[in-house]
Image (tube, rainbow, N blue to C red):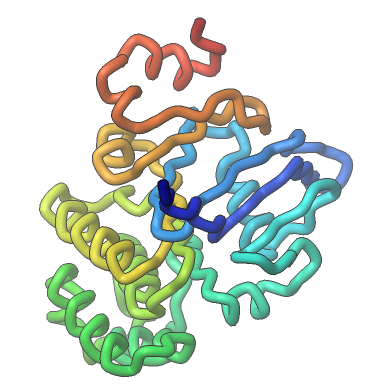
Amino acid sequence: MSTSPEPQAALTVEGVSASYGPLQILFDASLYVAEGEMVALLGPNGVGKSTLLKVIGGLLPATAGSIHLGGREVTTASARERVELGLCQVVGQSSFPSLTVYENLTMHGYAAADRAWHKEAVSAALEVFPRLGARRDQLASTLSGGERQMLALAKAIVQDPRILVVDEFSLGLAPVVVGGLLDLVRKLNERGAAVLLVEQSVNVALSLVDRAYLMEKGSIIAEEHAESLRHDPERLRALMLGGHAS
């Protein structure tokens, strides 16, 4: 009797610790995201979620542990090398202020292997964010904070990543825009991109992902199936409040 092979890991984080100077933030944190899977990293503010994403992206060195993208260890690799391996990370409202909205989106397709998808993705991103579409020829430096956040999210869509890491993608966005973005993330996932999502809106996260990790005080305290958490709000509440649910 034949069995389907287990999916390979797109992202593996094993026993990672990290510090800002003498202050240790992460303690032996481990998680994995399989190829084609969508996973959430949940927890209250200040528990180390964004710090873990910085370590994954190569923006902060790990003091212990290892990180693999696909089958390659990237623990000491530069952020650029990780991008070349298919990692795409949304970080704040970063953009090129002297370029227009359209130029920002077009330039961020440099890593996309599929040029046809690149052109389609630029158009799709502008459709999801109609305010950006109306400002496609406007310099990024003249956008509002909310519009710059939209642009940062739209750029991630264009890159056609193998692993998409998003920090707070619904923050400050209207529900109708969030709904459109969810659809695009699902489309990227259907094309083969694995997704790691940090999101304060638990309902948004659990409506999208397959599994969720819960974090507290720099450590992963639980790994759960999203469906189980959706049907057990008391356990979810206990985990989100930073306690180990029984």
